[in-house]
Length: 616
Ligand code: F6R
Image 1: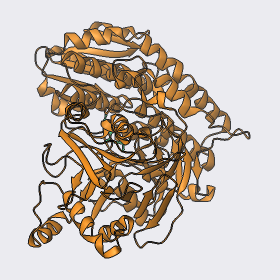
Image 2: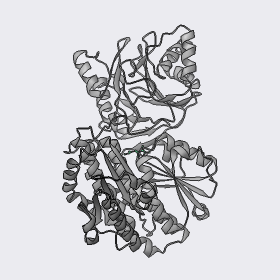
Image 3: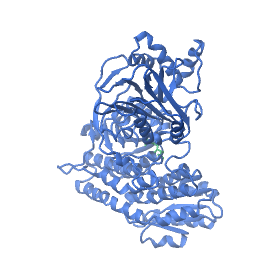
Image 4: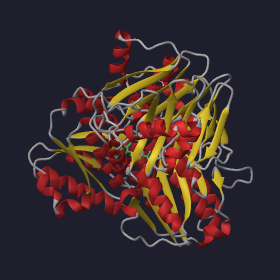
């Protein structure tokens, strides 16, 4: 949510910053802006709308040449998406420029204080107050921007990453972080700041993770980090494991299609290297002992959106393998209902970005109650894994499209690995049973590949249905979260009414929505699994068809019993019951993507959304 870039080095800052913003635009696209320091003044351009609008402005009104600059792409919180509310915000004397990701919760109070002191604010944002306070702090600290930033941060409440430059200093960019993401890129004679590594990975793969409540200054020569009191702190270095090409579209029209087609590889990568030389499963980071894990009597999964759906799928497998009860909770609701969590609870936070504020706050709450915490995350070094006792990275590679696809499949894989790991430690499964499930998982990249090979009719069907006002999704068992995920994808991309239901719930209300021609996507369980489930969904199909629904049936190859009740059949390979979500979700991703494309929507950057939701 909001993308931030800072650069100081030998290159033209504008080029580096705009290129970085292009990589971060998935984080927000309500406006974009840049500031460079040139001579002894700041040069700022900003524009409402996507980055392309800013680039057009820069075409007609170029910036001064400079090798130090900052840039921002915005997801609006305080104040609409206008030019005036776009970042950078500049202090009243025009000497300090600030960009921000997060929310300054006490901004109204600070704004009132500044207004009383005679400052005229020129935007409706919470950020602008920071520019004024920072500029006003500078004289008292001899113009030291880092010290002024520390003083300013002491006055701020809420979540923020702030990055600032000052007019008469062409050597330093200063940033601060509390609860919002910020990483440092380490170059030769140049250094970078960004919301995530994709902004600078074309220049360097060496990076530093920043901790909570830290201020960082980057110059051409080096990086200095302190806490908000000015005490020097060490940052954890890490090397980015993917290269710049991974953040390009690779011949696909959209990042989303590229990411859908990457899923066989992502699933394989998520599974790679999980079995140690002793034949036992291993996670990426484990700061919990086996005896800690044996004492666990309850698992709580916290997550949002698609990651929540991955948690719902995982519940079936983890309970089945470990016999530990699993609650799956929407992170945004969790800490507001006095949940029962203690030192025998394992809280599993699932998050692609590792920065989702709702999930982070729920995680912190669970830990405060004594819970152990395990993170399933795609972003190495992000806050959620950093604040957990154990970590399993999903290794899906960068997910740029706002709608999550490959992250979902790899989250399921990772959660399954956690379930098997617990079963191994607690002795719920024999080694050969775990090895057998691992073999099934190892077959999944190929199975997903097969789905992708046969997906073309789904695209045609989506085009044909593009004008319908509503699509319903039903499923049972692990097919139920798949139905929820299919509906979420359609809502966010095609901007239409779409809803997922547990098929058994239809008769308790939702069946009233069925009328002539309403498309109902049915995620059919395997007839080889629990036979009753399969029989029951066949009945549900008959029930909706009897009321005029047009059924789009996702069924495994060879399941002929669905044929009489299906208007359209999408075939998926035969896989074990618990693996079905890994194949049946894929056609639904393609369906949503194709329907949005047919409606002329921007698939990678759907309206009102941003990739990484760093506000509550
Ligand atoms: C939907 C989607 C969102 C995210 C949710 C959690 O396509 O992408 O629902 O899944 O915002 O994000 P992370 O996984 O980064 O915590």
